[in-house]
Image (cartoon, rainbow, N blue to C red; front, side, top):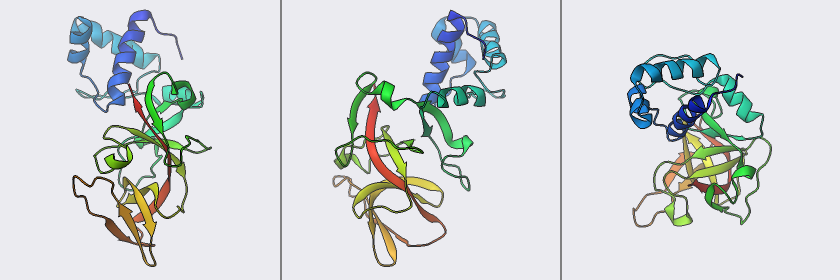
Length: 218
């Protein structure tokens, strides 16, 4: 990949930070943020595409990171961050991966807190990061917007916090295995969320993995 100029780097980092929040900026917003003319932003974005940092796309807010850039980040041993899980696609399908994060590099510097249900923050080969939405697990310290590290597994110990796919949507809950069903228990007494019960072995239900840690970016 070609190196970026200082101005291109600043614009790219801004775009990348907005994409991390699943809020791609428009070219007008980029122009306003950097006090630039829109035609100058158009040229900068074009250079970022030509140099392989942004994917070719069209539309008002269609900016996204290129496969080449994501692969470069992946090669630095970062873990994939999974955003929206598209129906019918595996959780780690390319369309679901928003970015890669180097957990080792983040500990103690860019992370405000790191927790683990078992008191450790281990990661194993194949682990990935899932961005949490919603407040159903706040009583165990997992807040809306947090990131959880997930160790892939098809089985999970009773009462362990895990990630389960239900109708192609990922949910983070305490998992309890019953005789013929799986109980997905939330952790937010104040909100009064109810435990969800799903039939064990159903085609629309799959245990994805165990949550081994949780962190919050500053």
